[in-house]
Image: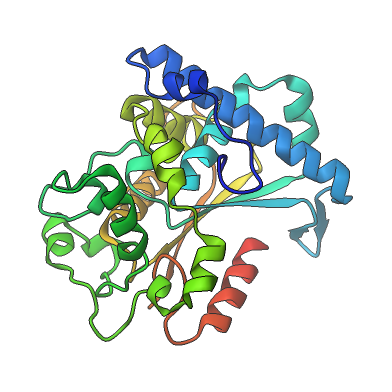
Length: 291
């Protein structure tokens, strides 16, 4: 994500483009994001000596597995969804390296989906607070552990409305020492730019998702998508996983190229980590990234 420490911020013109009332301007802004991510991956390959994908004993190895987390999935979908619009030199280069795209605990809104319902609480939709208050409340709330969701087939709006925070488990960020939390947090980024990204039209975001997953125009056909969802995460992440799982089940439309999509549940994990066994959780994630 841009605009965090060590990353390039946004110009006023770029922020205006994201919040423009013109859908075409927003679409072009997200296309630019996709192109920037592609350029970054090319840079990584060339400067870190990444080896091309190889097939060893029927399993692909080497190359890149790109993982996007939470709101970062908006940019991951802009990258894959705009692949046909990248320069051919870039797509021809990355086809030898890009192996997997991991969508880790995506939020519903960044996929261009409407919120589950007004009865499903989310601090960023709570207009009783100021913009700053919403950002500060969200950073703790999103790291809470909620009652474990059932299988995605059994997830419904009433189920989401009924889920509560688990009082026996302290939110991840509240378990961190203040200095540790301060070292990894930049609340100001929400006010500066993340809020603008969330203004991008659902129409633009959803179109990116469909082009990324089910209407790829044949670009990078061997890049599969792995969806990892945490069943103790906040409601919108569970709802997003259900949406993508439903896309995975649908047969490809005639003349359209659909990616292989795998959906895996991480049990007793929230948006940040597993409550009981964080080391095991990280090892599981590392194993999945090698898919």
